[in-house]
Image (cartoon, rainbow, N blue to C red; front, top):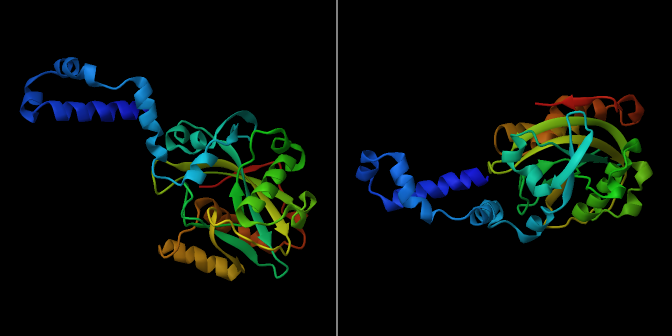
Length: 276
């Protein structure tokens, strides 16, 4: 990001200082010598790099400071970094990978709760997705590995934050850890993207939903056929569906939906499935 800013500023300085005819007649060193004193300091350029958040929703920008868990391709924790750094495509292209989760909540009619992400969201605003998608943070309660307990605590926290679902309605023992998937996807805004190992968590509950408007624009309960129709609308560009939900729905969800009465038959904790 900093190198990109340097190139951009230098190019703008050169173009504003010299006529095109002069630039053609002299070498690059001469141009650099005559513009060097005008190039901003590295400190200023770093501030310019931070302009990727300029104009974005203040509440969502504050959440970018949250510390996510960095992992290797096998989901071993190797460090941590801010939510902002984890979602910059410049870092993703260098291999930065973080841990995430996706909750799939089914009601007593076996319908799946979907949410439409708020327009204020930084990544994939206005897109339809599964019930809740977010990240465990680098805090003791959300880093516990046994039975994905840390991830379950994070999911419980975010269900309350995004959808107003009280923790008492979704106790930790009701979360079913199904499997993990690995995917990468850029956003419409090329500055941002996703690169995650995503824990898939199932819940079978009837709950009271009170969405937070800064997080969720709309929500629906869909049966399998309605999900298929949503995916078709996304392919015809009349709806937007998040890449992680589209990948899971197209590759795995139908088989899982059929086994809701016996989730143990679909659990796979040994493998990370790579989705493209």
